[in-house]
Structure formats: structure tokens, C-alpha cells
View 1 (cartoon, one colour):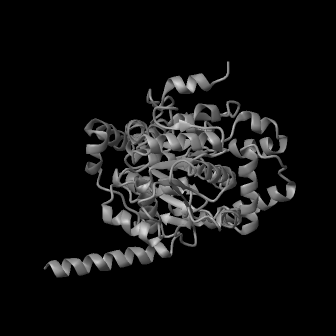
View 2 (spheres, helix red, strand yellow; view 1 turned 180 degrees about the horizontal axis):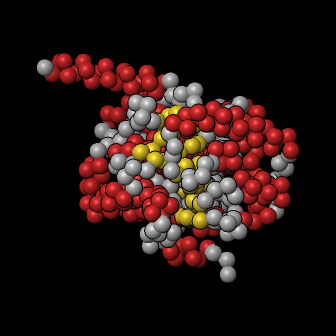
View 3 (tube, one colour; view 1 turned 180 degrees about the vertical axis):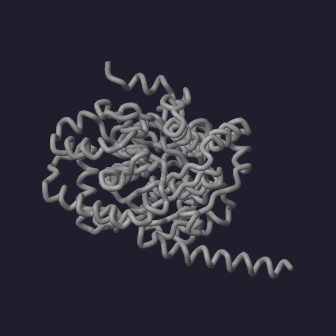
Length: 475
């Protein structure tokens, strides 16, 4: 009987893997219960109770019951790479397990389109440059093509609430929004009002698209664009503590990954995880390591993968490899785009690390910082974007402004393991309190409840620290 059960489990696993390889479908579908596309999964709800407590799960279930029968849809730009996809892989099946029907679509784009959207992303984060009419034309043409692709499917599945992530699919509401639907834009990037105001073409383009929405969700108060005439909410991103990327690992799993990449664990590891992106501060990590190793033996591991919507990734990866090719103490790792392999390897590298380096120049929210903090690791980063929401300097991590200061902090932590351990413990507790999936999904359901029933939960807008939000508001 056990042998039969084992065979069935292998067959089911093989079937799921085959389905995942074919995703997204031609119409962009990544997950759809009505189509039988339920290859994504999360742990049973009761497994989260020991982590977040019974009361928080009961609150979540109560909110979900109020929304029984509604349909939701999430749309983003890529199924591979980046924090948005990482959250949706858990959030979508989690909502369905709660009884709230939620589907996920990934838009399609060409290299010229993603070059345009990367330019938009960079401009929104303050990089100098112009959004040209030709770029805008390329953008709208691609969005119209996606809208045409979605329209037939959405005549069968009529979502009550649509959540669109980041600028790439932003204009879809212009083409697809129907009477009675509520469309919400979820902005994950590091953008401020001053940046928009300083670039009139960019301002007009984003504002025109945003005006088709009923609400916008931001990661922090200082990202809120106050003059947009729509509801505004603040929900920080989250991690799934039971996902492959964040669950506890046995020692053999960690050792397997280190041996695969020929990493000597006897040498203290500094680790940076993330996209190969100019905004991630990778060169500062390299410089900091080279200074620190003159006093404390250590090695640097920089690991990331290529997101399909980021045309700069390959060039940045090649530049870093060239800069470090003669340095045996630095390992540059291009991780697999296979989600399960990637998740377990990131988990193993973070758990093997003594210190995590994430000195981003701009950062909408450092999800990888939250992942490292959950694993009890001290994080050295910069005080930019929404990172101050995550890290309290000297308590749950450290802010630096230069490679020299980062190196000094590395030397101090390697020389004082007890301090590193204490900071890691506080970091873990902070993530447990604020950045776990059940609580932040509850925030999404509060917004949905307002749109469906007209009842605004008292925690719906101030779902995070009110003191932080108010301190960042002007005047």
C-alpha cells in the first residue's frame, strides 16, 4: 500500500511540474481554479497558527467569510524573478484556500517593451532621462495587445476586484475596466511625488493611467501621491514563512547547496541576494568585502537570477563577473529560474551566511531583507526607500553610507558573534510582528470588504505603524 501511495505522489508531482512548465498560458493565466490550474500551493492554514497565533488567523478567516462569493484577479509583468511574483506565488493559493476566488495573470511583452518599462521604472526612481512619444506608443500598443488577449477570458471570469502590480501593466485598466469593477494599483517601487513633479511627461503619463483606478496601495507613507483622486492604502510587502524560500532547512540541505557552488563554509560568508540590477548596490558590497577581509577572514557570495522583464540584468551580471574574475574570495552565482530550486538555494545561502549585505541605492521595499531578517541574520543596508520601515539602525539591522563604513560594521560583527546573534533575534521578532503573509493578506481583504460592502475597517488605512506614516507626511 505504501509503495502504491509513493507511486501516486510521484505521478502527481510530475503532473504539477509539467503544468508549471507550460505556464503562463497563452492568455496569461498562471493560476485559475475554474480552469483546473491549481499547481501553486501553500501550507494548510492551521500550520500558520504556531507562527502568528490563533487570534490573527481567526481575524483572517472572519474577513474571508465576509467576502465569500467575490472574484479577484491579480496581474503583474513576470512569473520569474522579483518580489511581486514571489508574493503572488503564495498569496493567490492562500486566498483560494480561504474561500476567496483569486486568479493570477502575467502579461506578455517584447524586448522593446521591457526596455521601455525599465526606463519608466528608472525614471520613477529618479534617474535622469526622458520618456519619449515613441516609448509611450510602444507601451500602449503592448498593453492594448494584452488587453485584447485577456478580454475573451474575462468575459467568462468577471472579477469584482482587479489588483495590478507596478508600472508595466498599469494601463490595462484603460482598456479592460468594466462597470461595477474596482481596480487597484499596487505600486512596489521607490517613487516620490517630487520625482514625478520634476518630470512633466512622466507625471502626465503615470497620472493619466492612475486615474482609471479606484485605489492605490503603497508600501510606505512617503510613497503616497496625494493629488491622485483615488483611495490610498499602505500595506508593506510580506513573506510566506512556510514557503521553500523561508522554511527551516536541515543541515544537509544547506550543505548540498554550498557544495554545488564550491563554497567553503569554514570561511565566514557575507551574502547578497537579488536581481543583478544597477540599483542594488552590488559594487559597494564588493568594495566593503575587500576592505573587511584585510582584518577578518571572509568571503562574499552574490547570487541572483534574471527577471524576464529586466533587460539590464545580463549586462550587469557580466560586468560584475568581469570585475571579480581574479578574486577567489568572491562567488558570483546566477541562480536557476526554476522557482523551487531557486527558493531552496536562496534559503540555504541566507541561512549559511554570517552577515547579509543589501546596500541598495533605491528600494521600494527590500523583500530579500525581510527574508534574511526572518532567518535571524544581521543585515547591513542603506537608509533608502522603504527599508527604514523594515530596519531600525542598531537594533534590527544596520545602515551604512559607504563601503568603508560597511566594512567596519562587517569587521565588528564578525569579531563579536553575540552582537550579530542578538540583532538577528530582534530582526526575526520584528518580521514576525509585521511582515508575515496572514496579516498583510488580511489588509487586502479589508480593502476588498470596503469596496464590496462599503464598510471601512478601522485598520484598513493605518494597517502599519501610524507613527511612521505620520512622521513621513509633509506639514
